[in-house]
Amino acid sequence: MSFDLTSGPIAVDIIRQGMMSQDCGGFVAFEGWVRDYNDGKAVLRLEYEAYAELAILEGHRIINEALEQFPVKDIRSVHRVGLLDLKEVAVWVGVTAIHREEAFDACRYVINEIKSRVPIWKKEFFADGTTDWTRCQNCSGDLGNK
Amino acid sequence: MSFDLTSGPIAVDIIRQGMMSQDCGGFVAFEGWVRDYNDGKAVLRLEYEAYAELAILEGHRIINEALEQFPVKDIRSVHRVGLLDLKEVAVWVGVTAIHREEAFDACRYVINEIKSRVPIWKKEFFADGTTDWTRCQNCSGDLGNK
Amino acid sequence: MSPSEPIVRQVRLRYFAVLRERAGISSEERETISTTVEELYDEIKEEKGLDLEKKFIRIACNGDFVDFNYSLSDGDEVVFIPPVAGG
Amino acid sequence: MSPSEPIVRQVRLRYFAVLRERAGISSEERETISTTVEELYDEIKEEKGLDLEKKFIRIACNGDFVDFNYSLSDGDEVVFIPPVAGG
Image (cartoon, rainbow over all chains, first blue to last red):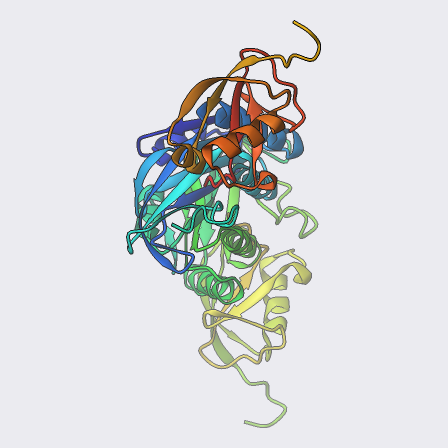
């Protein structure tokens, strides 16, 4: 199992092939891609910033929770940091298992927990010249409404 | 959307890249791999046989059902036929969507329906020299118990 | 043709997987007096020694699934579908 | 040191994302009389004009999450964590 941060493109196919095992019948992967639209505004690019030490600690915790909770074989995940262009892979989660149902459940658990618990932040650069730290817009009187 | 049969290796990364779209934020893939063990017996290799015309018709139906049922963007699937070695990809299902939950749901729906409805059969070649048409073992008095 | 004389239809059968191995052929043209695909299966089952119970099979005609009571027409292509195991 | 004299602790603060931009710095060493991380946030919030409501933040100390009532020790590294948005 692994949880990594990377500032370069995520080598999806290499990681996937590294998980290939002849004692696993099922593989489920989730990828988060940079989308050109959010909250009704056109997005040009994204920046991810991480509190790296804690992000990696929490990422490993999440994967260990999933490995305890679901009878799967292996779980690996990588999250990008830095500037990303449209269509780039921001996060990747791969799960191998003997049976597919558990692979789906574990993969969904891991990505949901990553999104809610791992200290990584997303800054959206909109076509209209504004920027937003996602999910921080309504945390205060004026922050995020710049 | 597409559902194809192929007698050569499934070009997973090429299909996946062909689905990349800047208006989708989430991608979920399922892969079925050839496993070295089933029903308590070591497996050496597999053979998939398809009733091709109906397999493709039914595969398209399943994908269309999923596209109606779940708000996803695109679904593609490929199934191998012929002889496969251990670790090879037997089936691949990829789903793109704006939101990940729907992508997971649609992917799981498609693979479950493929496995139960599409006329493709799997013959397992065991290390002990026996063979089995999977799921046909208990359909008669002696068939499959060879 | 008198009403008591059974109608003979020319059908094409294709066999896949366990049924192909059991029948020893992958397709055949045959004349049948069966009027439904269910009757045709009973006829074939007997003749070829197929022992797959009917409750485990599905039937396709001319490239799509049909009910067991589907009425055969001349020229139909019929496939008996043993339990599938894709993926 | 008399009991009435507040204890001064040396702590290190790191800022990320919206808080980094708001504070205008990514880290600082500071002396504080705050005894808990919650008091420290109130202190910093005031000084830096951070207006992120407390209910939206989490706090980490020395590389792991802690409660708001975590007692500061000399040399602690504290991070206030705004709502995360990975993936």
